[in-house]
Length: 530
Image (cartoon, rainbow, N blue to C red; front, side, top):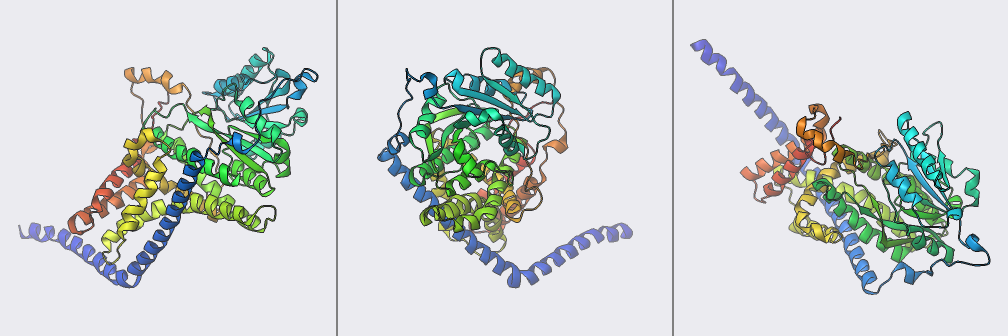
């Protein structure tokens, strides 16, 4: 009996020793190291929050001004509908090239090719160019067969392949421009594989380029066909609607500059060539070209009421890959081009400041870093270190106003704002990581994973779920970064609930739940393998 009791006392003593050692280390490091570092981080994060706040308020004021005074593109620039000329016939219309880059797009290739071939434009003044980088022979055959089917209907369509994928999308677009028949084209419209332009798309965009020789790019807005598919797609719609409703509109109306979205836009080919053509040095070849063209003095026009249907990524895996590329690429491009922008002599100082500070630094770097570091690391850490406090204006008022300004783009989803905040904070983990990878040019800096499109694939697989449950591998559903972040936030929430005074635990528990849901893969659409 004595042996049992003495043995049982070993374990509590061991735990007490570990707890005591941890507490001693914490006390030793807290005052000289942890408190000063945390205070510095609070100051830095508050500074970044103010920068983001000013940027959002400024753009809000500008967009109100634009809407009130009706600064629409067709009022700012000359726009007249294209007219027939009896003497010269169809040669009065410019020659247009339509490029559709593809990579194993089994689910959507018919939609995009069909939409492009359905564009209303004189048939002898348009060339449809399908740039197929597919590595699956079966899919290649299907795409080629679809092109042949449209060619048999009299459509001038070219099916182009290459023997490597060098440069990914940028490489495909660059290679496509080398064909002899492209030399006769004046403009090039680009549509990703899931984009479906309306038949009148060219009639609404080309006149801007024809009547205004200083314009290089006309960009249309995206319209999401699957925004109601799941909660994750609704959250994406809120973020992207702000980008199109405010950021693109403000850039177009005030600086005649914005980042090309890589699709649903028409370029003047001479402007593309003057800017140096497509480059594959980053994973945002579209933004790269836009910045270089802008530095040559070219202007861009955004037509917000012209919408092109497309698909949002509805699986969490696809969305994570997309956000990595969209966050890493701009940061990497900023590093490569900052000095070049500063030294440029063709654009005004005001425009250079806008591109460097507002377009790149605040939106592409500060916005990602402050969202994760401040709200998911620093603010929770102040719970454990009560010597460090965050003023209420920084912890509550500024983020609330910024959130409201972000939400104006999608009024129908205002009731989902809490979910959107939590989801954006979860995604900020990946965006922050990707931003640092881009700035430091390490690891996955040049990783290019094509965003998976489902088209009607999911609809075809849904009935099978009723009869046979898909086999789910646990390893495929677990995301350890999210789980670790969720565990830390939950621990801080428990500590604040027990000992804290700020009542941050309400936010911390909610945010930890959001991280756990993402960490266990219960977000987005699940697509069965068979």
